[in-house]
Each structure stands twice: as structure tokens, then as C-alpha cells.
Image 1 (cartoon, rainbow, N blue to C red):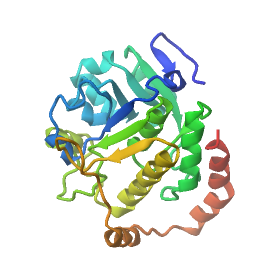
Image 2 (cartoon, helix red, strand yellow; image 1 turned 30 degrees about the horizontal axis):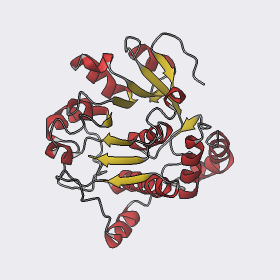
Image 3 (cartoon, one colour; image 1 turned 135 degrees about the horizontal axis):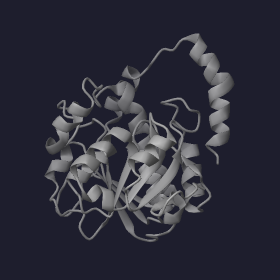
Length: 283
């Protein structure tokens, strides 16, 4: 459990079954989000990932695992401080102290522990069987660490499972599959590039393929665990069209995603990283 250091700071496990039996919507910030009505998440249990808050500031929850995104939103959007936030502790690239200092004035924060690239600590080593194990462990409120493969979406899906979702619905989570060179919906595209100049495109298969693999593993695992799962392509009324991945295109992307590593990396992974993560990620 994360020790509560001030009023308003909570362990994510305090969210256990808070929305048991309800559908939960998770909004990413890819280009398709521009097509959704601004009131789309009104009267839904919604969680916005990072910059999606700009589109849906009245969402039930926000989610953050990235320090620069939260720092920007805190500086520009006053309600980001007063509304419920689910956050990784620590966020990517900073310490636990820096994470808590950034969010010290937020009124309601639910922190969770995070290990990236579970269960081995190596990006791209996505394990569908382990993902199902982690989903079932989370359903029992027995998990203490969660992780993903390069997307905040993955840890947020686990948070939806923790909250007892009977159905998980993803919007704006195309993982670069739309093409066209855009990273985010139009309202925040320039903001993204200003925060991260020269940042690698989501279209790069070395980044996007592990992300897609893990989202697929979580989708399939949720369905096995009895949680309905819809991964929507775009807005329609009623919602209906889901993302479908062409097998031939995806096989080509997997080939393009292959990476080569030094022998020193491989030895370190074999003797240190994989054994450590296999133990810690089961917690």
C-alpha cells in the first residue's frame, strides 16, 4: 500500500469495485478524438489519458503517468487540480518525491505503483498469459504493481478493472494506426510537439507494435475474465465500428519492429532484469 502523506492522497486500491458492474470509458488523444461531441463522456464513467483532458474536462477521472503532461495541464486548466486524478507513482522519468510535489495541491489523487514492460522488463516482450493473470489478480484486489508496454493506456485499463468495470470502452486509442503523420487530435497537436520537440512518431513500428500487442493482450484477457471490451475506431451514433487489425499489415509491421541489441544488453536482461521483473511483477 502507498502511505498516505496528506489528505487527498490515496492508494489506488481505494478505488476497488467503486464502479462495479458499470461500463467505463477510457479516452486517449489520437486524431479521431476530434470527431467526438464535447459532451460525449457526460453521464458516463470516463477516464481521460493525459491531453484528452482538454477535450473532456468534465470526465469522472483523469489518468497520468507522464510528468510533463500533468505539469502542462496544471498550468493551463484549473479544474485539473480539483478533480479526481489517478496517477503512477513515480511518473515516468522522475522520482516519487517529484511526482508528489507536482501533485501536492491536487484535491484527490489515487496513486499506483508501476513497472514498465512487465513481466520481463524488456519492451516488446508482451505476454498474453501474464496479462490475463494480472487482470484476474486485479479483480481480486490482490495486485500491487501494474505496467504497460509504452502506453499509459495499459495501466489505465488495469485501473478500470480494479474499479470493477463490467465493460471497458476505448476511444481515441489508435496507437498510430490512423497514419497521416498526426500524433494527437487537432486541438493539442501543436501542444504535444512544443512539449516534446523531435519526439519519435507513433507511426514508428518499433514503438507502436509493442503498444498494439499489449492492448490486444489486455482486450483478449479482459474478455476471458468476463469483462466486455470495445476498442472503437471513431465516433458514430450509435457507437459500433471497432478497430480491426489487418493480419498481413500487422505481420509486416512486426518485421519492421525488429531490433538488434548488444550482447551486454542480452546478458544483463538474462541474468538481472528478467529474473527481477518476473518476481516483482507477480506482486
